[in-house]
Each structure stands twice: as C-alpha cells, then as structure tokens.
Length: 240
Image 1 (spheres, rainbow, N blue to C red):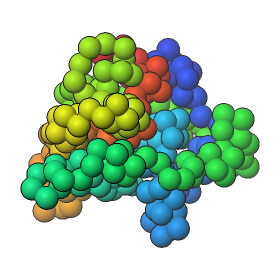
Image 2: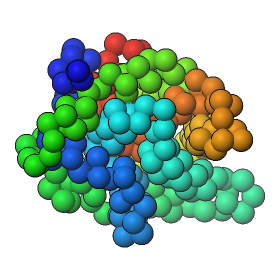
Image 3: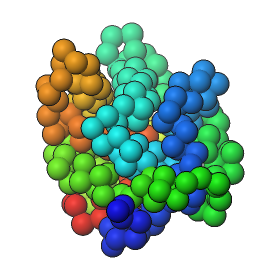
C-alpha cells in the first residue's frame, strides 16, 4: 500500500490527479519530444511546483532510475556553466548579457497546459496513489543531503550565505554586481560535475560509481533552476 503523500513533510506538494497522470506519461518518453524539450529549455526546466512534482513522480515509480530528471537538469546546468563562464574571452561578456541569457523565455510547460493542484484525470487509482507518494523522494533527499545542502540559496532561506539560485542571481546581476558571476560559476560547475557523475552511473559499465554528493546534486540542480522556496517548504522541510 502506498502512502498518499499526506505526511507532515509533504505539506504544499500534494499533487493533483491530473499532475500525476501527466507526469506518469511524461516519464515514459514524452520528455524527449523535441518540441517539449524546447519548451523546457525556454523555462529553464519546470516551475518550482512542477519541477518538484517531476522529481517526486519519477522517484515514486523509478526510485533507482531517476533518469529523466537527471538528463534534463544536467543539460540545464551545463548551459548555466557556459553562461556564467568568465574565463578568457568569456570575461568580456557584459553582465546584462549574462542576466538576459539566464532569464526564462517561455512559460512552464505544465502550467501552460493548465495543470495545477485542481487538475483531474481518468487514471487507475493505484497509479495516482503511487505517483503522489513522496516517501522515495524524501528518502533520496535525506540520504543524499550532502549533495544539495551546500547549494541552497541564501535568499530563499533568508539566511546569510554566498550561494544564489538562478532567479535570485538574475536579481543580483540587475544590480551590476559582476563579481557574482565569478563566485556563482564555481557553485554551478560543482553541481554540474556531480550531476554528470550521477547520470553517468546509470550506464552499466559505470554502475555504483556515484556518491551521495553526486545523487544530491539532482536536488541542487532543481533548486538552482527554479528556486528553493517550494522545496524547503515541503519535501526538504526539517532537513536543514
């Protein structure tokens, strides 16, 4: 029997029938559709709610193969590394250009399809119950916290710290603080490198080569792209 997700730590991330059913089909392969990938790239993934939902649903159905999430956010972190690279000729790129390249240029794919907490679906009850079960996602976050805790955005938590998520980095760059590019590139590159190791571990010849820091980088990437507030108020509550 699957937990229905109504545990204390899951407040704020209970998914609707429509969201679960859409994401169940999403992880079957529609994420690889070129038009879908273009929309995901335009928004830097999914919005905070649906980025979290994507992770929860994939972890619920495939706890040992959270591959779709890893591929998407791994590609986005590589893109972020390229945008924030200030070495060599890249150092001549104006701050406003970096800020422009970091912004979302399209809506969240799921929001645009009108999926929200009230969405309905005609799907097997067992699928819906399993998809909104957050226990696998919570366990993953807890066991691999060394991989995401160092990268939590200070502005999202309201605490002092050097790390910024993408939305708050855009705000900081709007204040012409060019030194933010150099410091944030270091953090983004660390997330990218660990997430690449995690993604690589899905290959048979590299099985069991990932560490808790590599696995936790997936959560760090989701938080960096969409902001940490939704994650911290629900799935990660009590883990910091």
